[in-house]
Amino acid sequence: MPEELEESLQSLINRAVVYSDPGISLETAVIDLPVPQPADGEVLVRLYYSGVCHTDVPFCLNALPGLRVPTPKGQIGGHEGVGVVVAHGPGVTSPLIGSRVGIKYAADACLTCDNCIEDAEASCLNIKVSGYFTPGTFQQYCIATARYVTPIPDNLDLAAAAPLMCGGVTIYTALRKAGLRPGDCVAVFGAGGGLGHLRIQYAKAMGGRVIALDVGSKKDFCLSQAADEFIDITQFGVNEDLATKVKSLSNGGVRISLQCTSSSRAYAQAFSSLCFRGTLVCIGVPQNPVSFAPNIAAIVGQELRIISAKTGNRVDVKECLNLAARGFIKCHYQIRKMSELTNVFKEMQAGLIEGRAILDLDGM
Image (cartoon, rainbow, N blue to C red; front, top):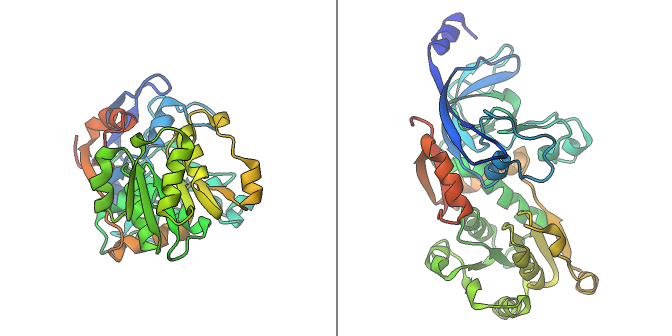
């Protein structure tokens, strides 16, 4: 990095949002930090927006299953950042200065371990997770591995690209892994939420027919996202009643049930709604995992599949963004201030946010 550029960056302030008491509360604080300097193989990205993902909440609360050690106090969270490359570390020539890039859940992966070789970079054995011990995207200036940032198409709105770095690519990857074919019927549970409306749109863009399921107040929103049918889940009692309704709207059951919520009951409903050789895609972690016990006889007799999707790899993100750049995906979002992150977390937990929340990193 040229000496004059380094001196210029050192004169700037990096405003960031940190977790004040991880594992104890959702409290966050906006602080000023020095602008970090990129090392070998790294770039410095001036971030302008960061999506707020539901996974950020359990990171803050130390409630995400599989966490090796607790999230440290003062951690900069976030893993849906978008911005512009402003400096190169030694040896870096690409991406070019001024390039629009995104930073994902996997801040870096080794690309050589068995998991990476199988295209499971988000499960890399040497992964660096953005917002968990690796400084995340709730900050104005973020260090990233040059070979691992994601190029963002020029014709894609930068703010709208932020939620696609995790929420969007997770849905796209889930549908691809489930083998969605044109004309397949897809049940979207929790369709009116931040991930839900992206599930509807990606399923439609990939040729699916969508049945959206949520509370009645979200009917108009789900239909505005091009859902073919809507079911008010509050109108049904036992699991089989709702499954019967889904099957009546889908000629015997859906090919794919996307389950992104943490409701164990919703998992049972999603499973019961499948047709022959249907696939339940597990994305959300149930509140009580042992309470969902799939019917093995049904799995064998109907040749059903249960798969999972954590997030996507570099190719998945590229394809996910290209669909949005071509106009097939319109992310519904609301811009919030950095100082509002605690309130955003609380609103997310209460189910009060329609679409996705995005932090504007240009100010408080």
